[in-house]
Length: 255
Image 1 (cartoon, rainbow, N blue to C red):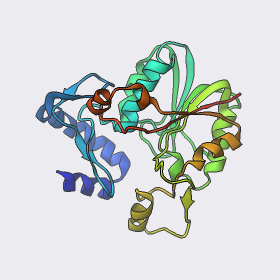
Image 2 (cartoon, rainbow, N blue to C red):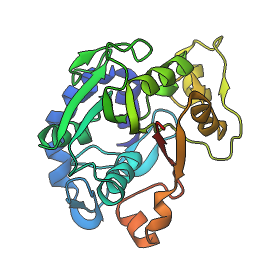
Image 3 (cartoon, one colour):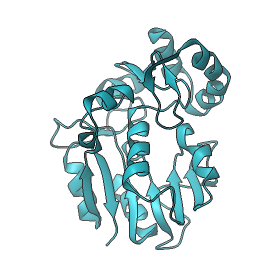
């Protein structure tokens, strides 16, 4: 199964993978039913989760029911327990909306919810993150998760997110993390997909972020909380929800 997952991830375009997932999902939900691990997004439990990864696959991380990964489940728990996202009237912009969240956020009556992306079939507005078609100070809450590592001019993208975020608004800007790396690495001369996968972790990534990412956000103008929410959870909860211990959630505020 591990080799099969790796083949499909590398061989098929993401929009096609999204469509195919709807067909195979019921099979995984039935075959992996159990009580050992729980997806907090929908509350379903399983004997194990599925593997995931383009180069070095991680075992037991992809939820069979919501298709969430560690970062999605961590973000859900943070939003649910540490914010008023699910209750307060908010105008929300969600870049490259994840399947795990899309329908659930769309149903929330407190949200004025807009999705955007250049290629995603789930996007309401087809737009370039570096040139957004929204007025200044338009949104109370912005979600942009595992997007910036795909963008050649991430400084411009960050500036655009800052521009359309309302004052006192919140933006959560998750990225793939290597907490042992101090400096971000990028090299535009690396264009071969296999080489990009080897160096950047995925064929369509253009950099590997280091801890300097947070200061880059601060230089844009954001106030940044490097939230390690797994510190608020027990080891048993981290294992049960299949989270990555120590993953930092970049919670950004526009003063």
